[in-house]
Amino acid sequence: MNYVITNLSLQKKDYCKLHACLTSAFEKLFQLLSVSSISVGISGFFATLSVYVLLGITPNFRICLAVFLMSFSLYSLNKLTDVKEDAINLPERLTFLRGRKNLIIAYSAVAYSMCMLLAFLDKPSSIAITLFPLIANALYGSRLLPGMRRLKDIPIMKNVVVAVSWAFTTTLLPASHMVDRTSIVALVFYFILVKGFVNTVLYDTRDVKGDRENGIRTLPVLMGSRNTVLILLAANSTLLPLLVLFNSSAKLITTMLVLNGFACILYFGKNISPIAMDIFVDGEWMLACFVCLLINRAWLLA
Image (cartoon, rainbow, N blue to C red; front, side, top):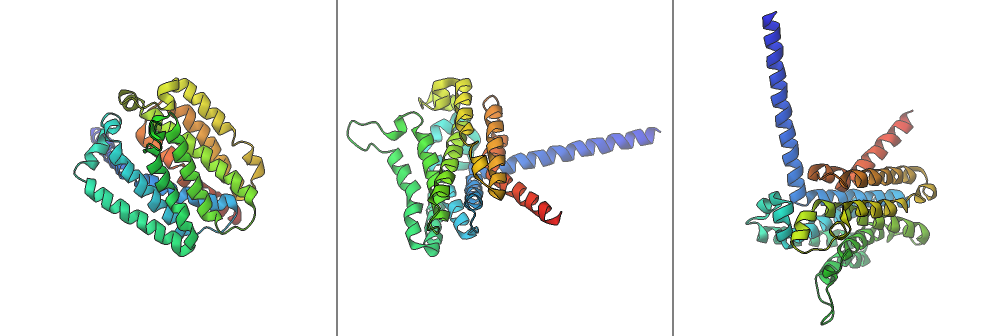
């Protein structure tokens, strides 16, 4: 009897050790994906794939890869300019960046060049679309006229610039082959625009401490967490009519993303969990695509 109890106790300890090791490895993997901007690139890939579904056209995985490379490149470069805020909000990111500045600039330039090449091979005029986020990012940090404030100094403009850039590239690159149906393109553009705005503000709720200490006036800093949550809920609610307008797989993926938006706003408006945020905010596009694929497969087999 004592042997059995001892054996069960040892098995329980081994299980706890294994669980702790797997949990630690899981957390380190997601931290690496986050600090290296790979997770944002993956989000860009699946956001573009989702747009193909919403537009009702056959996905072009070369364009999805191009958006992956673009997102990865731009967010990697942005991390080099956000050092002061990250020192407070995400110190593990500074550990990754330390001593790697030239390497990050080099592989970001290569990634963006590959993005433009893939877009050119698909359609030469698409290069103009791939340049939009780069130009918008440059204008965001520049003083356009003497004495005029930079867009970076105007509250909420960061969220607007990111959301517009995200919607512009992920929507227009797939839609560039469509000669009509501009109404559906406009609806998808609006959907991606609102999702991009909500998600960037959610990340600002995580970075309130560092932003406040560095004088960065984000929506959560100016309005507080409660009012920010109300604004985001109102913005996400404007997507509800699209559930009626889309059909088939587009309706399914839209429903999942809208519901996930409400859940993330309510949860992350009060809780700071970087890994969970990367999974359910940045990773929502990938999760929605996989769930949609599984449901469609099950439907075909039924």
